[in-house]
Amino acid sequence: MKTLSGLALVAVLAGGCASTSPEQKIVDDAAAALGGVERIASLKTLTIQGTGAAPLTGQNRMPDDELPVWKVKAYTRSIDLANGRTRVDQVREAAFLFAGETVQHQSQGVDGSVAYNVSPNGAMTRAGEAAVHDRRLELLQHPLTIVRAALDKNAKLEHARTEGPDRVVDVTTATGERVTLAVDAATDLPSRVIAMADNANLGDVKLVTAFDDFEDVNGLKLPRHISTNIDKYLQFDLQVSKQAVDAPVPDLSATAQVKTASAPAPPPIVVTAEPVGRGIWWLAGSGNHRSVVFEFADHLVLYEVPLNEARSKAVIDKARTLSSKPLTTAIVSHHHFDHSGGLRVAVAEGLTIVTQRSNQLFFTDLLARAHTIVPDALQKNPKPATFQFVDDSLTLKDPTPGGMEVQLYHLLDNPREGTNLFAYVPRDRMLVQADLYDSTWNQHPWGQNVIANLEQRHLKVDRDVPVHGAVEPFDQMVKTIKAHPPLTATN
Image (cartoon, rainbow, N blue to C red; front, top):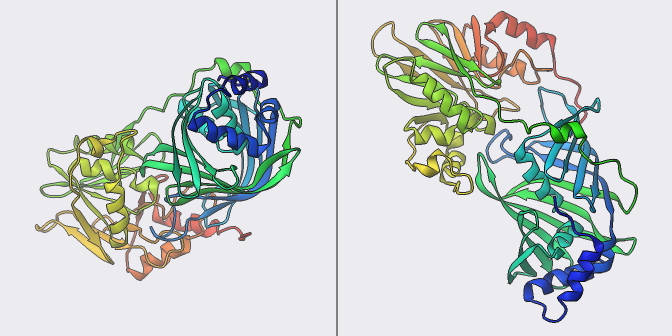
């Protein structure tokens, strides 16, 4: 990763004084407001500490509810400005019902063109190529780093303009990141950094990081509040408690072993088909997102198009090999992003979408969104969606006696899963469900609600066939839920 030395930065400023473009003027004014070009150029390190909140996009109880939040109890970002390195170390705690580890320690960094993760035991591993771009972009989400990058002689500045109270300029950094810098016209202090990015579920999204509540730190103006949104969704909100410039920072470089290691490629997608009943297949394989295929007299129905387009396309392709009958329908269990990640490819494949009615507006929006940065199947092959919405229950049934029957029920009064549809096959006394239960979960905070729903519906269950976890007897599922009650809430 190219970096800008203090001498080079000052030389650029001196050489540009004769005729300053409107774009350069915006950047120069921002640098002056922050503390001056020479001061910015001379910086070696920046350390930011604080606490905050990290909401989970696409994981709320209902599509229009507030997002569940990770409470960030300790946050430190260390930046080696001279060498283009940064690392974030944080401790976060789930302030919502969660079945996994409720307290998590995370450490992630980037060293030039190498992204890495550090486990709690100190082991460093190389992260994928996508992480390099994301973390370089994240590195620019601070007034000092974006202005410093914009002052680089190899940066490209374009399209100076006014937007509301801000003067705005588009910046392409020396390493190729494209962002927009907004500067408050009244104070000349940077107010926002904007970038366009791809989100697998939301498509083309605008990442906006805003700065406010500036304070003086060793001759510099630095923000005490930094927040990042993905479109309308808050992604991270940081309240800064301490900032330091040119203070000692840990070694932020990737180890030699990590640098020479190949960047991990996405794991291969494997879809297996295991018969779990007459005309019923459990599609498992790689990962922990499964699907289920039901064979009716003249067609197939798929329960769950999970995770993302790649997984769901492989699942759809596999389902079509199980019978000569056409696959016509996909049941989307609920709106959480890891369970609706295949919604768009299912529509592109011509499948009718069955889902709970409360998902109607949210799914309609997801299907209408542009995916031009990374075109997906629906962007390449637009098709109108066909929906069948379920209010409380719906029975899919062959007209002939003894044929397939699948009953769909809305999970009622659940504190975590507001739009969830689970399936019941009366012939096999089989429960097919997503996010109701997984035998590998650390705790089961909504398990008793699941059992109560089954009792309320008068369903006699012998076997659980899940999207997450393993197929197992229902008695074992009940035993596990009762043996692992939810942890005492700390939120």
